[in-house]
Image 1 (spheres, one colour):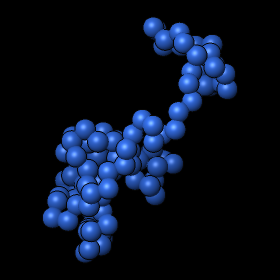
Image 2 (cartoon, rainbow, N blue to C red):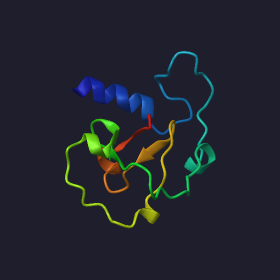
Image 3 (spheres, rainbow, N blue to C red):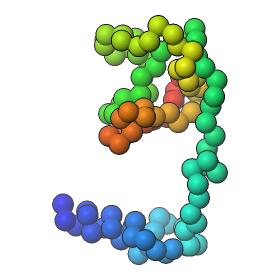
Image 4 (tube, helix red, strand yellow):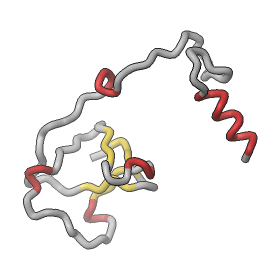
Length: 103
């Protein structure tokens, strides 16, 4: 376990050129704002199928999870997610609730 931690530290230390790099990457790192790489979808999803962003399984159709639906009846504030989007659960992002949408 300590070895993995040491390797992770080498890859993520605060430096423009970390000690361990992916093959083919030699330039210095560039700091970017998340909004420079992604845009937030602002469309709502009334009438669309409800999905769930899970911690372990990424994005799944809510109907396939066998959970009780305690979502709000008014879905106008729920954001639309399209195929190829990266979505996250803001309440569980710290636990890794994010994923690439196949739906």
